[in-house]
Length: 200
Length: 260
Image (cartoon, rainbow over all chains, first blue to last red; front, top):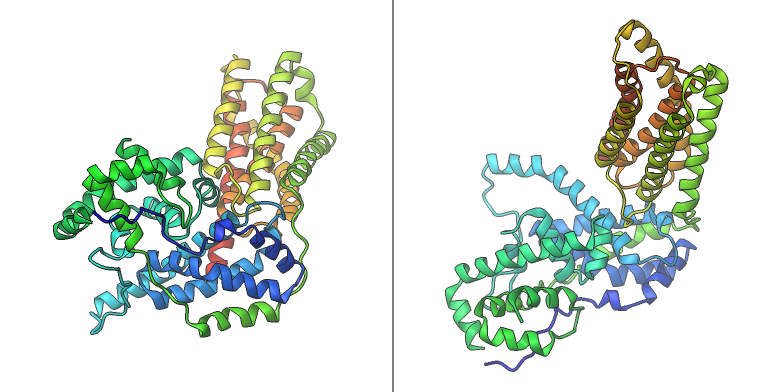
């Protein structure tokens, strides 16, 4: 058995950085350097969040740009002293929904025309396990969103509750149901992987 | 430790942290949990953002970077909406008179205006919270449901005359006057809200409609001398329902226009 302790995905540890709120305040005051730093530090996790939901890295690039434009326009609605990440992800999930609504007819047309090459650049998983986008595709949207915010974006349960305008209990319930379903999916999906994981 | 407790531990795990020893012990004997934890750990996306994408994000943001004034606290907005609600109801009674109020008993006054005030507080807080992304808020549909049930319940409890004389003619006039009272309140609340309404225009529209509709119902209770249950249940209640529906529709139109 592998002795590696089970840990959370490394992510960007953004929630552990209290400096983000100070940067946001400076950004509201028109500080260019603060705006730059926020874009640098928040974009990777936001991009992962969009990539997991779209399964398409290039498309995630576009949504990321839309998200920053919305964040920029709405920056006066952030109240200094309040948690920043729920505010950011509340905007991000609305941008995501808007983008998918716009994309739906486009995807439908492309399906009808049976495009010759796949337009999706698949996300790569590591090792024998499916990539997380494939894994989470087995979940209903609300559960997928909660798990991706928890495990891909690295938010706490409380932060996810605020970002999704729901209660902590509702978030936990969705996460429990999602984990139960993922256990079944993983066991069914790759018996050989399970054996390998079991042998770790 | 059970599988469910492992779930709890996973939820509490922050980036870079390790599962507690009790959870690790459970994993050694549970293939399903072991696979789940490994799946979520090892299948993380290895994504690098193209520097050109970051540059495309920076350029428009930095070009339009200016100091912005953060929104006032939600409590300030909620208090402001309540003041608008009360002031509009008083102004409406000055305009239309208060024949209805003089016919109500003290208990009826206390219960009706107490419920209306409580609902106005809930709607005001809902609108104020909707102005700020990431703040927990009450959904417009829930708000409408609670408000209608509360108002109809109080009418049913207080008015026991079920006659329907002149139901349509008198009712339509009362309904029209109620809607006239709604419009100024809706405009005033919307003026205060417009700077913060960035994410959920439908929900915000519904809540703005609820505050305005409650003003209309309060005005009706002040001026309307018809105290039969069918009249107040239908024509007074309808002012609230129509206001919320109109607010939701305006929010939906604004949202659609923004998306296009």
